[in-house]
Length: 405
Image (cartoon, rainbow, N blue to C red):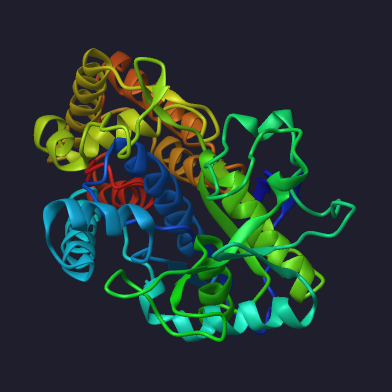
């Protein structure tokens, strides 16, 4: 089955073909580890988990990387507030994050590099920018200096992305500002504050350089698929792509995918604002399968409003689906639901995911299967098909991790 996705940068659909000499390369932006992860993070990683499962089920070789941001001002500030070393805080929250991913049955990436372990590579990126005249100093920080004319191969800076802006230190990020295309590449910072030596003085690297450096080292650029939440479009993914266009003359990624927010009271769920429902608490309350059912029910690029009533309704719907699927297995006498219908269901669910990551269409098919079994005079599969039926439900579980088998 073909893999076809919509590129967030161009807005156009495209078929994804891997180089036959290497695996498909997928780089997903990971967490900044300073506080517990919430269901907004969960939704992003669940979508890419389902995409990975579908790619691997299609027997397409895949190399999946997801970084850990452990060098960042929010980490340093919270560690200071807690009076602990920033590394201690970062490692603790990183362990908590991986525990949350296991709670959700999210498959671990093939490689999960930390930014703190790639400072040397990041310094080389700054040197390369400096050699090209693309690093300029202002006060105690060095910034990427963009070309006069924006490259049409990058995300546009303007009103369409104004609501996604994560403010850059020392930069006017308003939509019509010339400075909006600049970003920090190195910031001077003296011990005892966290810092590393460099030709530009002791300090810390700019956030955006870490993903460029780590993707280049662990996957090679350009990557085939790159993703994260929609709030990463600007400036993070814009900046990564700007680096690739400057230093390599090509896009950072062949295809970008961005997931919509989980909102609460109409606002984006956010660790920095303290507005969040943690992954751990939501799994404990609703269960991992029900949470997957709830968070993946809408198209990946749309936002979903967190609603405990809807989460409970999703849990009840998933429980009913699981019960009916298990009751359909022919134990002894068989029923009148043809096996070809279950085979078609599995095939179509897989195709939906590979075709624009359409978990919403896949879920509608599962709801249709629930109604089909419910309405049948005997909602069981034919006698003698137990082993094959179990294998087909197991294939659905490998795709969606819903515990149906």
